[in-house]
Length: 392
Image (tube, rainbow, N blue to C red; front, side):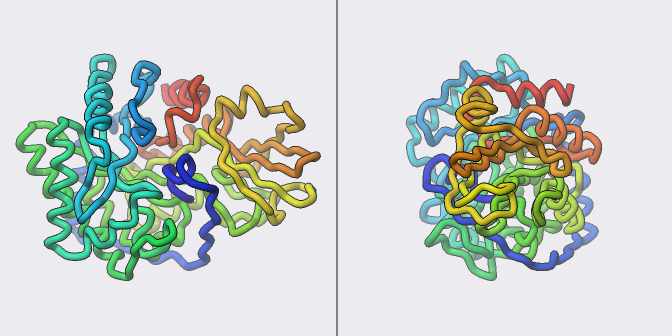
């Protein structure tokens, strides 16, 4: 993001990764294209846009009663750790209770899919070691599928931040991650195929990937996509060094020279071989606050501080045109923002209008749908309601 969803809630604000590099095009072989076509038609939810909500099990017991499950197609349970080469539940008692409660939601929405999401910002440090060899990949894949087999869940989501490039301080990454990223998905898919035959039910494999396009240089997304049902684009936290930017703009801004946007990301991943009907646009249900020494136009200026603002319900109810903040809209970027002339604060976020624009973009481009981080960030479901209204 980007920087994972997980970090935004559990650690201090992050410095941006800004890498300028040409995209490397990759094309899948004919056999991979055949797999791709098969995978794209197996999930029953592909007849309408998917709405994937991340639910934070890391907080403890999940209050499932507040989840408006009729407006979701998938829940990604965040997160499962990677320890000693295996998928690992750090608090299995809590996790198992959460799995049971989440599965009860299928009584209201029988088509709901529940996936475990492995990694995130804080728990990605061991991915590279876990998938380094064929033998280790098999162990890792089996352990991942064993969890969803034990709890009768619907799939595995991989949120490795990041293969082949730095993530959180101290994370292991190596050049071999480029190929091993693809081989990891192949290994998990094989294990899922076995589980599918056992259960008679489709089992999903998805991934969350950063929205900054230089990521494409360190992986083989076109090849990896052959094994995936969805590629969830974390099209938020799209930082540019220490410059104030819209962190989740739909299109490049006219206010400053922009290098990242949802549209740029979608085009780049498509050019790299990921089918459009597997691309999922990520929506932030939170904001990013930047502070400048002296407020001019805000965007394009160097910031001296950056914070995570959780989440949209609080922003709408307590900040928009309140407490010294004035609301503006960047018509080119299709993005709202707040300025506080007294404090020098600039807040970038998504609101109902920008979410509506992104949902229309998904429909126009025939993308798979949207996902969001994360459910607790908009307790009054302002944005989820807008997603549901636009798609229906």
